[in-house]
Amino acid sequence: EIERKEYDPRIRPWYQAAVETGEATWSPIYVFSARPILGISPVIPVYDETGSLFGVLGIDLTLAELTDFLRGLDISPTGEAIIIERTGDFVATSGDEPPFTTTDDGKQARLKVTDSSRPLIRATAQHLLNKFGSFDKIEGNQQWTFDFEGDQIFVEAAPLQDGRGLDWLTVVIIPAKDFTGPILENLRRTVYLGILVLIVATALGVLLASWIIQPILVVSNVASAIDDGNYELAPLAPVAERTDEVGQLSRVFKHMAEQVYAREQRLKKEVQQLRIEIDETKRKQQVSDIVETDFFVDLQAKARDIRRRHGNGSDDKESEES
Image 1: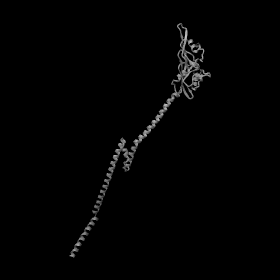
Image 2 (image 1 turned 90 degrees about the vertical axis):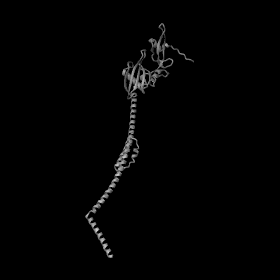
Image 3 (image 1 turned 120 degrees about the vertical axis):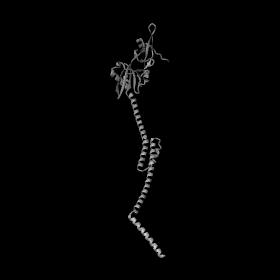
Image 4 (image 1 turned 45 degrees about the vertical axis):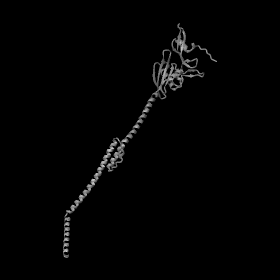
């Protein structure tokens, strides 16, 4: 069975608004007849050729549709955007909360911004009232800040008027942390990146220093050993295989050390030979010194005399035997 209801548009708010102004205008926010939901209608009266009212043309916009539009705006992570009437009733909100209440019989009813379920919106509305006295007194763009739960809140309120009966307030509420949060996060990332770069640079510096200094320490140790008379050059072999300047230095040092060692060995042999020659010369000189002494000369003379006498004695003996 089809339900039938009597409907007289002439008593509806949207129709009466068009008749009263006689031109394009906005109806007040009202409950639709087809469905018990809140909405508003832009309307325009239509007249015939005689100037008599022929009818009214209107388009219905629900508060839920206006709210969906606000929710599609990219405001800030925790920011809010609301539209309210000068009476303080909600028109739309970007938050999760609907801009109306629902009665037990399913009808939508107006919701005061000061009765919002969201603490930040309630605090902002109360701040507006404390600052301006009433919503009617807010004219032009107004910007200010206030503190809420330890955070600074930036607020901008501006009238929304079109000259055709629309007179709302748009209020944008943005906590300072939505601005400082990304800045602090970028700063934190920069600090972390700086620390990482410092660690990597330090590690590379240590590796580079080890790569450069360690071979030099090997050369230094070998040089110290050579200074102590130890010509063990085996530790220089890995360093000398390098193709850089340190390797070139090691090869030159190794070659010089080998030459010094060879020269030292030759010098030792020459010193040994010279020592032998000196000893032989000293021996001959000592013999010469002994031979030339008076005692040795006298001894030689006695020896010759003994040999001579011995020789004469032998000759006499041979004569007697004959």
